[in-house]
Image 1 (cartoon, rainbow, N blue to C red):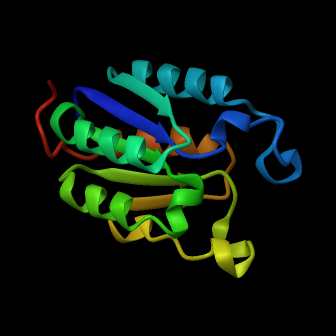
Image 2 (spheres, rainbow, N blue to C red):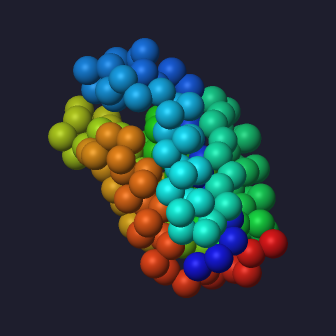
Length: 150
């Protein structure tokens, strides 16, 4: 794969490292970004890394990725469980998509166990903390790009 991987992060992930560290650990989003940029660089890929607390912004970014990215890593956070607009955008993206969750959502309360986003994802990585982002980037790099890099 060549081109740029978009790494999109949903609501409250800007609080990584301080919000519920017993669940999400002490790694900050800035550290996750450094990790993603390092791994993408090692693989000869660009990395567009973003975070939003707003559903519509996330949908816009997914649609942008459709035109500009070779693949997409998404940690939709709370949008995972209720966002039909995000699911619809991901279904239309026609790219390899890796869904990442820092925690193992299947071991959480029932509210957090069924991700709608998974219906559109190529693969899902959960429960490995921030390392899940690295796993996702490496896994996507092994797949051919669905859309040529811009």
